[in-house]
Length: 96
Image (tube, rainbow, N blue to C red; front, side, top):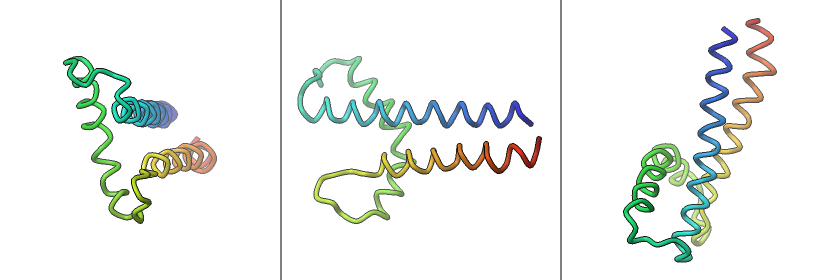
């Protein structure tokens, strides 16, 4: 059971870093810091969008319009933090 909890924790940790990378990438793209016509840059952007959008889109629908500010990644990061903390403080001691 410990291996399962550690694997879930690893996946949540990886997704945290993917969310952060996606947010940074979107800022760099929006401010024209990176070359948007580069195929490698576009491939990274498509990958990050494909991985994060299924989670972020439903949260964006629930949040109010903040005038161009997207706080959905912050909400997802808080939820991931809650899940990881809940998993190690409540579920792990009860199971182990």
